Image 1 (cartoon, rainbow, N blue to C red):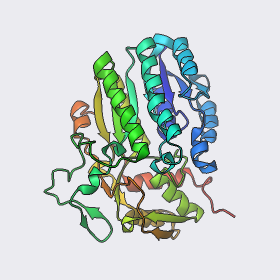
Image 2: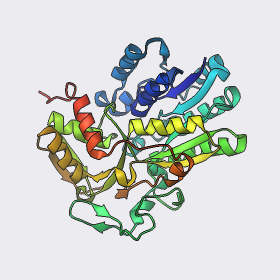
Image 3: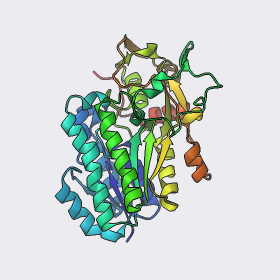
Length: 357
């Protein structure tokens, strides 16, 4: 039996990974205790996704409501499956830099210590299994905000001659910057993943995600930019823009494109790798541009208010350069752009995201 062990298995990337690797013929063992509901309330709960996975996949999916901070429980699961584990896909996290400041111990224990628990058990029980980690572009802190941005009508942009015009590469420094408490915990986890690769010769990769998105997102205000924006539009909620005139730029990559990148690494793993992972120049937008797209797709006017105070650690402009990953995996193809992502969100959630009474 070949097992894909997926943490955060009911989250956006986790659930996409569960379905994808089950289709590849692996038995998927999922770990998810719905901490997202604790972080973000009812909007963020992933309980609905657990039931969908069980219904869709039957015996191909085994769910465990385990907290990755619980070393004994994590060790017991790894001991049970041992070298049958063919890949570890670690997507479980506290994902919000706003929320992290409220409970720093919880944030660090989930993001950093939880990752250490998984790495050490991979080393002890499944040392041949590739270890795939969803890191974040927040490891770069606010360094991207020092780029010489030019204000345009609907977005901020870089001069085409700038070295990062095609996107931010892995050579950007993570030092001497403001990360947010969340960013710090993810830096710790990111470096742990690299170190377990280089020090113990494990096949590890930290994927530094931009906006990872898709129709399965349990969208909440504190996490889930495009999905929450589309949800607000469809439910006629008021969306709050925080700072930068709504012209801040994000690149967005669909969850399916993320997991096909994971599959590429799984099939030809490397040791201690770091990859930026995002929509790049093919798929990016500002908030204002996303509003226009959402209105065109749904036919519903976007309701929004503006708060001139930007969130601490928020990026004014972030586009990923995936050149390093593409060089290592030239057969990988990106399928989605922002309009396609938003349209799929609209169609997939038409019955769930309806106007509230």
